[in-house]
Every structure is written in C-alpha cells, then in structure tokens.
Image 1 (cartoon, one colour):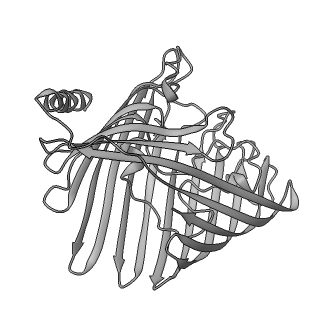
Image 2 (cartoon, one colour; image 1 turned 60 degrees about the vertical axis):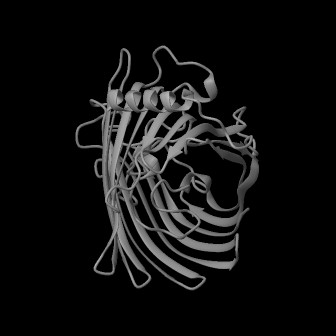
Image 3 (cartoon, helix red, strand yellow; image 1 turned 30 degrees about the horizontal axis):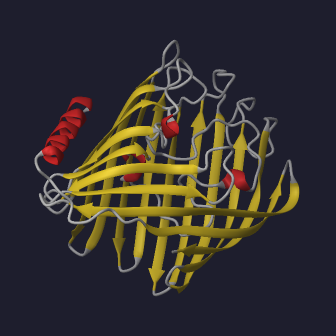
Length: 356
C-alpha cells in the first residue's frame, strides 16, 4: 500500500508541474464549531459532581482550481481551548480531482478514522470514541474506547482517498512516518510507532430503498525495540425510513502489551425533522499493565440520548449514560461491585452545539 501511495503522490506532482496555473490566488474562509456542556456525574470514586465542558475550533479553509482541472487547497484548524502547547489541532494541504480522488499531506487523521463505520449516536457523550473521561475518572484501564484502526492519530502523514467507484465503493490509504511527529516537530527515536500504514475499503450505497454503509480497515506500525502494532476493524450500518441500526468490531494486536485487546459497539438511532434519538452500547477489553492470565482491563459505556436542531448551525443535545472503567486486578472484567480497581457510575449531560 505504501508503494501505491507514493506512486499516486508522484503522479499528482507531475500533474502540478506540467504548466498548471490557478485561476486566482487561494483565499481562506472561516468556519468551525463550539460546544458548551453542563453535566452531573455520580461515580464511585468522585461521588456526585457537577462539571462544565467546552470545546472550540476555528478553521481556516480555502482552495483554488488549476487550469488543468486539479483543485488544491489548505485546511488549518486552530484550537479555541488551551491544549498544553498544541494550539493547532490539524493542518494539511490537499489536491483533488473528480477522476482520481484526493491526496492530503500534513497533520490529519488517517483513513482508519476518516472513512470507517460504527454504531450511530446523536448524543453528547457518543459511543465510539466517547468523551467519558471528561466526566468520570479512568482508574487505570487501557481498554479501547473505539473500534477504529487509527493509532496514527493526527500526526504528519500522506493520505489518498479514491473517488466513489461504481457509485458505491471507496478506498483509502495513509502512511505516517512516526506517531510522535505532529506539527513538524520531527520523529521520536524509540517511543513511537514508525512507518504506520493503514488502509480502508468502504461500501456506501442504497439497496432496495435501504441505505447500506460498511467498512473494513487494517493498520500496521513498527516500534523500535518494542512491540509492533496491528489493528483491524469492521463496521456495518443500515438505514431506512429515518431509522439507522449499526455497529462495529475492532481488534488491536500488540504482542502481549497492555493495549492488546478488542472492542465492539452496537447502536440504533431515529431521526425525524429536527429531532433525533439514539441508544448505544460499547464494550472494550485489553490485557492491561499487569497482563495476568484471566484478568483484563475493561471499559463499558451505554448512552440514551436525544438531539434537537434549533436552527441551522445550532443544536441541543441531552444524554444519560452508564460508564465503567476497570483495571486488571479483577478476575472478571466489567464486574460491578467486584474487588478490582474500578470506577463506574451515571452521567447526565446537556449541551448547546454551534457550527459556523
């Protein structure tokens, strides 16, 4: 896959240097989002607490079309909240064509995250990759909160995504030199994954009035002096008459390391007019730091949620969730009330979500 990606990059570069000129200079526009949440968490370790959570990003985007038909642009995403010195979330350039697809270069998530399928959800916490740790303390669990094969994160990478083939299929591949090279700071010697290659095949179509979306992804990364990483995921969702049912499964193979584990999630959602409701369930398990036989880290999350579109770019969401974290001192993972080092409880979140 890496050879294919480099070959595609070379072809695009050749297209750019063959007397291509832009009709006009790139002009950046402003977009982004903001969400403000208030919630109550009743957990084993933190008792009952009220918390406020916010997240804001301002995006600067622009593009121009060359006279050979290629479109080239930039996407720079500025954090509106302090991120421990990382004020730029993602920044990348892209080149696209209706004929051969889109090529991205810079700090952006890979295809194991961008074009995958998992349980549907409309709530504030979410099910796949939920933000449960904003509200409840993780007492040491390394179990996966997402099924995605996306260990490359938003580090510097090259990504190619094909156009939709036959009106239903799409493929993508990403290459990340190092998972410790975000924002051009250079690769780490030993503490990060290197030469990370990930690929995804997506089916997105309508069959007899049913919307069908399915994806399969795989990732491999090498780690100098430590365990290599292999991740796999698959997901399927089917929609009809406002209903969507879906889920997915992911597996991380890290040769016995603490993060070696798996996860799955299931969900159902319904939308009509400005209203939406969803119910989701996620379970993840991993070896944990101790790696004891028969003992695992665990993560469980459920969410019953609703959403309401107040106007264009203004949404209200509310959700009630049960969450559990468990470290591998417990012989039975996800065992409420057991002797393991765990935290569990209920969370109620309400929020306003703005996009501009």
